[in-house]
Amino acid sequence: MSRIGKLPIKLPKDVAVKLKGSDVSIKGKKGELHYTINPGITVKQEEETLVVERSNDSREQKSLHGLTRALLQNMVTGVTEGYTKTLQVIGTGFTAETVGPWLRLNLGYAHDILMEVPEGLEVTATAVSRREQGRLGVQAVIKVTGIDKEDVGKFAAEIRRCRLPENYKGKGIRYEGEYVRIKPGKAGATA
Image 1 (spheres, rainbow, N blue to C red):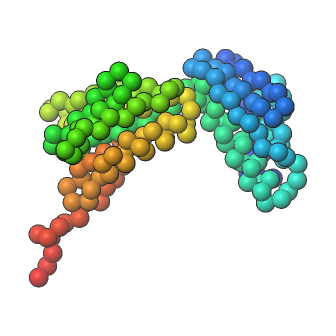
Image 2: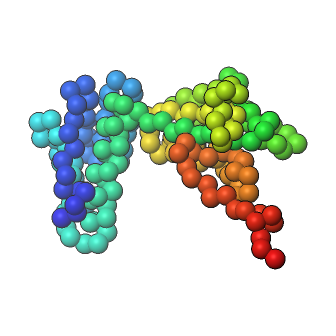
Image 3: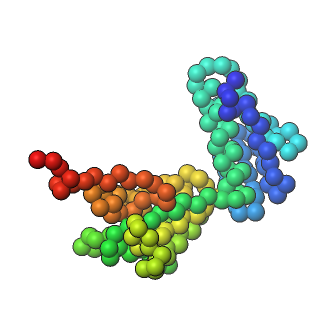
């Protein structure tokens, strides 16, 4: 059996699970998520746990077994705790702010970048004071919050893609805690 797939999913008391055919819906205090199970995979609720099983030991079924279990676990975590990705905007004059359902980024281009915040996600952008900028020179912090792990990660990646961190000065948008290796440039070259 799959090492991940065979682990049962523990359900907190405030989570309700509905199994109807191949559809699974999980409802918690933060919202509700739905998932359609692939053929050959079954999900059973046993008291306070969910158990994922597969029909045979083919390579495809083994991979779907672990995948389904991981996705259901992410759904349970999402409806109880939620997910957050934090991004740092680094660079002189770079700004980020939320304007209604939009995120406006000023990243040194000739124009501002407007990104529509997807439904189900909450985005906050706060400017950082000079005292709090630290050695990196963080200008703004963007937090993307939601109950669906995939949506949160996808939108955070779209924001980061607007200005990837560059290797010479470290300017750009990066995840909190992300390490960017800084190259020495021309001055560091030996003749």
